[in-house]
Image 1 (cartoon, rainbow, N blue to C red):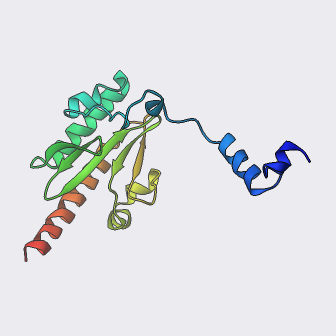
Image 2: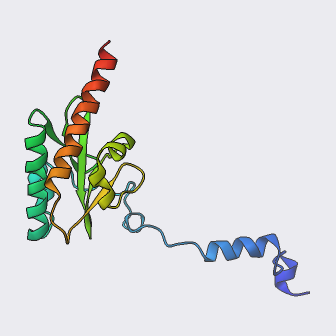
Image 3: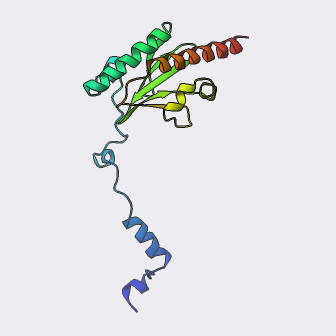
Length: 164
């Protein structure tokens, strides 16, 4: 009898399957290899300017235009960073935005907006409240203004319901 068989290691046995699984495991994350107890946390962003500065100049221009457009459409809204994204807050979260490799995501787009703002049909949406504004096209300023106005109305209606 072979030594492997004498210790219970038979190909196809539970022990050999477990050994195969152990040998195919992914390597430990880098932070564990460094001896850290917890993963390093991403650097907190201190504001819109710091977020926008992370991107190339052409994207920065679009982000600044988006910021100005939202600010003009909702001058009472406050700027904040939430979920590491620039956020406008007015009676709750109004809109978020984030720059990606090929688009700027604007959140949230509600089902009532999709039904009442026909210009939304020209842009890809995720079905989960996101509109994608391609970086290779001009920003649709009037559409953004309509989205923000719709969100302001929704937030005011929702705050009235909770106050009553």
